[in-house]
Amino acid sequence: MKPLRTILALAAAMSFSAGFIPADEKAVNPQIRKIVDQVSEDRIKAIIEKLVSFGTRSTMSNQDDPVRGIGAARLWIFDQFKSYSPRLQVRFDKYRVKKQGQRIFKDVDLYNVIAVLPGAKMPETQVLVSGHYDSLNLGNRPAGGAAAGPGTDAPPVPIGERPQPTLEESEKNAALPAPGACDDGSGTAAVMELARVMSQYVFDKTLVFVAFAGEEQGLIGSSLLAAKSHLEKQVIEAVLNNDIIGTDVSGNGRTGNTSVSVYSDETADSPSQQLARYTREIAERYIPSMKVNTVFLGDRLGRGGDHTPFQWEGYGAVRLSTPNEIYANQHRVTDTLENMSVPYTARVARVNAAVAASLALAPRAPIVMREPRAPAAAGAPTAAGTAPAVPAAPQTAAAPAPPRRPSPTISRGRSGYDALLQWKPAGPDDNIKGYTIVIRATTSPYWEQEIYVGKVTEYTLKDVSIDDAKFGVKAIGNDGGESLVSAYVYPPRLKTEILTVQ
Ligand SMILES: [Zn+2]
Image (cartoon, rainbow, N blue to C red):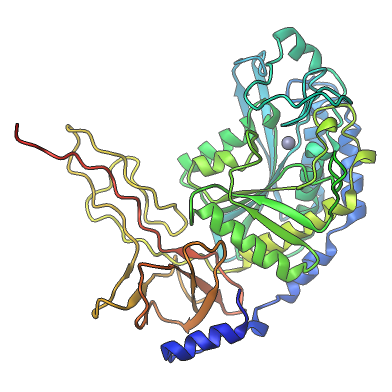
């Protein structure tokens, strides 16, 4: 945000009558502060040590061995979740996945491990914190996204030209040691440590801690859970996915333990980008020594993670990842505790704690989209505040009249030259103190100006053009907690068929 000076200057210039939140009143909630401080490096280390001790956590490894393989690992994670608090509802999210491709070379049981901490005031609204507990050893195949063979300086394998393992190799690899300390023991440990710390507190929204399986076979566990959540109309406000948060010196020697990359997507003002901005602002408020790099890309180029399936289903989701990877250790027997930095993992876990706790205690984001007037066709967007604004699917000739396209509740007002912003609370508003309008240049990545306008549901910015800036609104809770921003986004104009007489 710009300095207070700028905000006041803007206010004076526009003759606002409403009050403002001075920058120094940006809420730092003592409870969230405490949660962040309670994240324990020692516990994270102990969790990763234990995860590594299962030898391999490959989804295709032996599921029946009591001490080795993914079966033993998931039982241990389940029991750990259970031990943290009786208020955590722990379950396996189980699927039987059919043999497909080379990576799932036989029908396999797949278990995500889930711990739910029900919210006290808005239990239907969920905030997910996730990582994947499965690991992989690729044998002699190139590792990571840009790595060559182990310990070589051979040129990287171009993205898209990586050779697929044969069936025989896959079978062999499933039995190899795959410690997966950093990928993704680090993310799993962060999820488990947050479940332990946060289950000692009460939140307004429901927190869901997920350890995914099948990530290394193609985001299998997350895809299945995301699709099921969408089908069941689950309200997931945010997904904070942690994958490879365990190294702070990259393979080429670049160092930096004071930053984390947050990948969202490339669609301007998407729910995922709003979540990325929120992550940056909240994390840097509670942990000023950490910088959040918001990367407006879906992931590292040509590579994937468990946040993406949630984006496919319309949810806001981001990936937290180190900017300093060591490709030579990924999917190798050398992905060990000795080759990673537990203090760095703890720092990223604290980022998660601050953001997840803030979201879970804050109001829901206001609704800024008009409900479609005609009956919604299949695939048309819902009016839910957290649902993304996607254009309705093109209609075929045989389909009924298309529904009116959703549009944001922003206009030029009665004068035609003002910015009239309107919104609705996403539910009961007794926990809302008021609303803050945010503004930025269309070329700016971050909101630049904030105006607290009190508990109203519309506001006019006199002589402000809606045509050359981005606008949004967020709800402020009674304790100062901030919701995600709902941005006023017009769906793209659809191509129209022009009839000609010939
Ligand atoms: Zn991973």
